[in-house]
Image 1: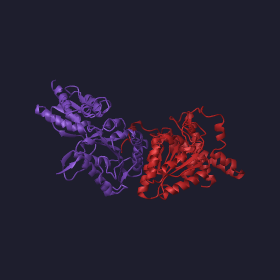
Image 2: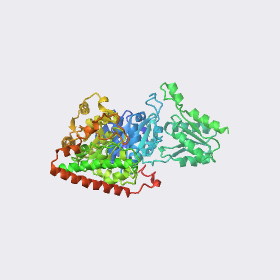
Image 3: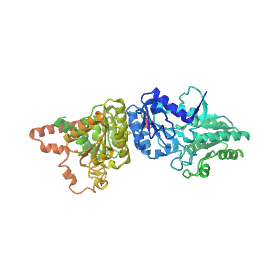
Image 4: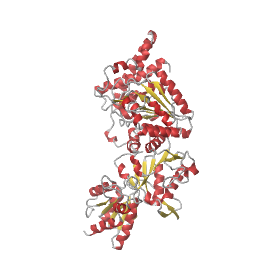
Length: 325
Length: 311
């Protein structure tokens, strides 16, 4: 085993993809000479040259558009959006261009673009730099959405995202960049579209991704001390979502709690709850619970931001309330 | 191309658009269409200087670019009829035409959005070093879109082999472009990106050819992007149902004296006129045959609606 951070895993995945495939190249703001705002591409320009690790102007529409055009002509670009919130600047290129090109050309061409986006709250970046925005894209058929919640997944899912012939939005949680983990010396790609049962248990199913997955694991520890065995599932891929794995768990636990670091409306959590209510109605002892952030922008002040992000206690409280039935 | 050939190429586009409008009026084209009548010299002049491996992108007013690039007329008619066409199988229609086999990246229905994509194609061309050039057409109104600004600057700083053709037909959809900008010529903006910008009479196919040969040659030799503003006039509305009440009386009639085909006719002697008449008869037969072939293509199987979302 070796110790790797989430940041190092993502950098390693890009380095390995660059080495393995000459059509792969990276582009984004400050990713080359500066090594990235979060240093996720640090050293890659020196290793692979400025034609394959490219700095761009502060022009998100041009970055994503250029990635699309390059992909149409045989390249496999990896574009970085420094903060996931900036997807709002280039929403057209993602939602109207990238996602639809293959369909509108009836499959004449695939568009193997990977967009890396730094997601998530918890670091005082305020309303325009702290959102988890994967839910913005749930209603855009044609995209795949990946949200790794562990070091090993960050490496394996990014390799698979870059190798995938479809466009992939790869969300990195920026509060996790320094998370360390023991990983096997030989990291391997992990298939998209498969959830991971992080922790097994028979009493309740908790589904959570990225920072919320870590809080769900903490909650499961606390609940365990009270005699409740929680099963924690990390979906890992948000689109396509592995409903089967969640359904299989709920069929056993009869209880479902979903935790997400965003507001509830129009979210993957809401979709999951609706779907499980329909598909696993007979298995559920009581209504599924969705724990999400309030319907406000992400606040700045530490006390407010901490109140905004769903916490370990919120999860424990929800599970214990269920347990009273 | 010599004169009869350029006339043929432009007449093919004009008669295609005219037939398309007739098919629209008779109910055979379900969707909205944006015709390029009067602007044919621009795609014909531009595509005339391109290689097969160059890339072409256009706007929703891009039927002329598709045809000049060699996309089959029957496929185009079939696609717009909502049939299972060999290009997009009825998923695209008039404003999203594309044909990968012709390196026609395609039209775009979001104003200006094709320019960043064309820049990306140019980036691939530059990396490969095979001299291919990415030509992208937009309308005058698109010069006010942020995506065009971002893409032009990116192309400039990376010295990308891209040529931006601005088809200035004086109308930004249904408003006069002079009311929407503070520059006299849109090509003046090229200086702001540090790239060459020229204005050309877009109704003169030879002038377009000369300007494009220079801009494409510059891009091909690695000297970076250029902007070519081609002045032209729309002989029809912004879209198929446009009543054009915003256009002054007599404007379209005057434009019909200056449009590319009329201009050639006006200068033609009796011998050339006879040749042009022959070409027109041949084009009419070509269009008839294409419509017949398109009608023979079935409508898409509804069971295939979910196909082609993912690879």
